Image 1 (cartoon, helix red, strand yellow):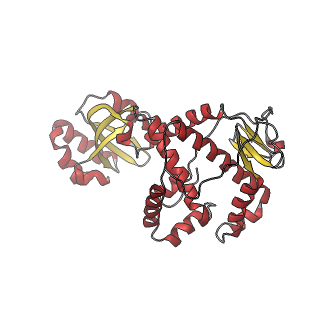
Image 2 (image 1 turned 135 degrees about the vertical axis):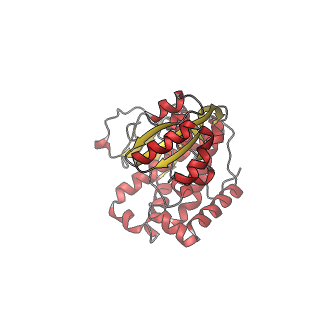
Image 3 (image 1 turned 60 degrees about the vertical axis):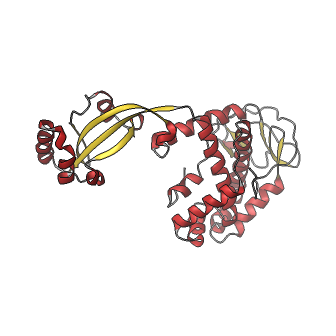
Amino acid sequence: MRRWHSPLLAAMLGTAALAISACGPAHPGAAATVGDVRITDAQVQKAANVMLQDSGTRAAAQADPAGLRRDVLTRLIKDVLLQRAAASRGVTVSEADVQHELALAEQQEGSRAQLEAAAASNGIAAADLHDYLYYYLLEQGLAAALTKDQVVAVAHVKVISLTDKSTADTVLAKVTANPGDFAQLAKQYSQDQSAANGGDVGEVPIDGLSDPLKTDIQNKPLNTPFLESDSSGYYIIMVVDRGNRPLSSVSGSQVAQQLQQQAVTKYLTSIAKQYPISVSPRYGVWDAASQTVVPASNSATSLSTPAAGGAPSSPPSSPAG
């Protein structure tokens, strides 16, 4: 996933990977079909023109016109699948939702101009911001719906971060002798930002940790300090408590994002099986390995017979919810 300056903008570009088989040629006049939904050449060209006309994205778009059209078609196909998936779970996004998040993004970037510049640096034309944000919110809503009953193992952790082994050994001896002094020693010695809180970093999702720290966090006795180290320094750690929490309680953590993305990917894969994807050979084929429209010569995926086409569909400019 491409990264933007602000966390919100970085997340906006996240779309779930779909493990779908590539399909045969789309119906005449269609760039692609997704089940009974036709994505027209006009839709692809209109979206491509936005990129070509935007000063921030024009150069990259002009450099590879065929690649631009494939990228646009990939996005439109995934948008249709996401709409289907969200509808099946009763997830909607209102125009008020979009405007609220757009205002937050502007605030994070500093101004609308800075927001548009950040978007352009990641290949998003200013005119496309609204729809990108709409689909981002739709995916977040779907993720929340799919994981609302999921729980994760967490540990309430305190830490004292130090830069040298000698000091770490000295502080470890002190806190081992009297664990009740942990907060005081953290404020005195710790180089971590949690020092002001007595080393208390709160609840940490255990599955988001790597070994040997993960194993130690899972198994060390409670309220018993132990020493860990990595290339950055030494860490005196004490596990205060362990338990299970709703995934929503740690929604901002890396492990929560991974679990939500996995849930969305799995669900979209099941949805995609209900709606065969066909891509016109003028654009390429839908490739399961990369989950994108690729040139036909680049795809190792076999072709199958497309489904019947239906009414056109395009990303909403004013979504209702």
